[in-house]
Length: 382
Image 1: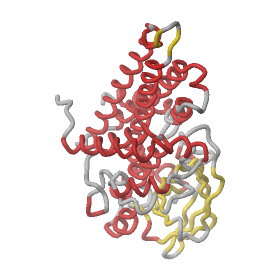
Image 2 (image 1 turned 90 degrees about the vertical axis):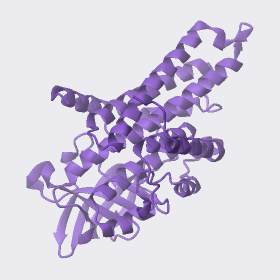
Image 3 (image 1 turned 120 degrees about the vertical axis):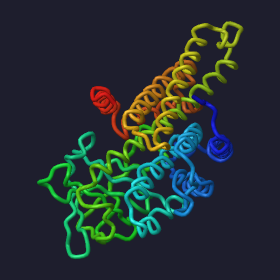
Image 4 (image 1 turned 180 degrees about the vertical axis):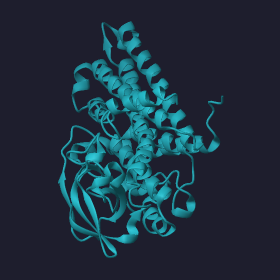
């Protein structure tokens, strides 16, 4: 067993870290305060290959493995969790299904712009009544000649208000249940009958847009069907497995930022004529944070290794997402406690980390669903 990163993995980790420290961290608080989409940052991440880490170079990507991807998301998320999730959605939820299930024509037309960072992608799955149970979705796609006519509303779509393209799940055969769900690639900028609905005001990740996608007799070319009709649910499950590695990596980044700031503050904050880092109560908090984060990161890297080696990773990604997000949320609460009153004020980034951490326990499958996935796998003996 080798825990040493390859030269390529070290390279992207170092590159992402330096970029995040130089370009993102200084403006992260302002992006959060103003709810500003970081368009310039996204473009620069594209130039660095961070928006298509695992996509082959022939389709505009960097052609690296999933460990590189996880390391990149961790470093970006340490500086700004909003930038981290934008990167994660483009890589995992949009690029992956288009690359895995798309035709050559679809890859050239719809994958290359997002993988190269020239455009942004999103994933249209969740609805008001279909979250943990996606088979309950109401959005429909009906074939009409050489087009599909789509009707329905998607909710809580990350990048939805700024994305150029969307991988959209819709029901093409209601009687077939989950086997009647299909996937489509939608050009959101050039689809009559589509418009962006409500843009959510959220607790955290405020620089990442979360929006409704509204389709009213929206017409999509027949050739934009992703794979075959009825394959959408299977595509969705595999896509979400990979997406959970991205969100787990985002959570690790938030947790790492929390730990680093807790350590720095504890060394400079004095009480009773000494830095609070001298007190065992603080030391134990820091020790627990560091230990739990290391354990969670190892689960993330294991899941990424499994995906890179094309081994089954459903259980591994669920474990990574569960552990990393719970750890990030717990570490953020501890970080606020260490900073005391300052941790509760926007003068320090700690309160932002706590707000950002919470969503990692919810999206890409709630942690309750993660436990069901893990249990299902171990009960089957996987």
